[in-house]
Figure (cartoon, rainbow, N blue to C red):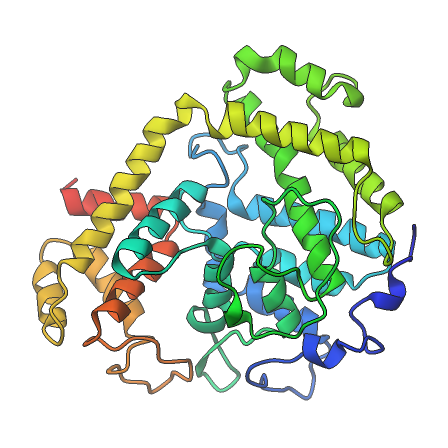
Length: 398
């Protein structure tokens, strides 16, 4: 019901408040800054390069010729809109949901979840670790993304705990219905796999649900636009009968938001009615069978695998401890854009780089091969689809 969560919102009266707004390092202050802690987080995210690149990253379908197919940044905007509506109605802190929403997918690689799976395979083989976008998103905002401070020094984003927790806790692939925040204030590095812990705030829980609401209907819209579901439209109309037999994403979203707000309470948790939950699960099952598992997507998936592995192996094969820079410089003759781009990026985080205008964390030591391999993975993860394809084409010579 309206404002039923106001007493548990992320505000100064909440017993978790000091933990929610805590930062690893204090942000620089201004005498004329009128923003709240979460508003500062929001603006820091939207001014970051990782956020800008989302507009050229695949959501589900790689379709550069169609401007109306959802990209990662449009999905992020959908999540922001849905989570704001829910939080505002329930009396939660919509500034916090807004900041989590725009940041929640910063860790996505090029080519959507297929790119994520490829990088995970590489990490398991060479680093004995896993790659999943929620963890990578937290690593990016904590360590990779840099902003200039008022004195011209580049520093890490240093977001609040509440936003950082919302990023790594947002996994929307789980079919749980009732969601409540955890009580424990944990070191977020304790996360070993997606959905290991519930979010720390109710606002983080809202974003987690909004993520799921946003993609199940929009993925259908895109699949219909591209003709992937032509042979399954009758089945789809039957499934969406409660929307009047139309494939209308806004109707699906509105109905699910209303149902969630009507059936949720701080005592019960955020939850849907049985009918709404069943509809969501049926839509998700349909999507996995006829969209994500479609044979139409397999050729592009194979292409993405070739691209990512070729970029990774080209840089990996140059490694030779302290002589790696020499090897990379030799490759510059053949792949100038790849080598110059990678070295410029690597030097921001390397222990042997000049740090005249850098105050960010040092991440890599060139004498450690795993540092170097991890750096390549992170560099690729930050690429847009187009940049990855252009880099691959430079490597193969056209």
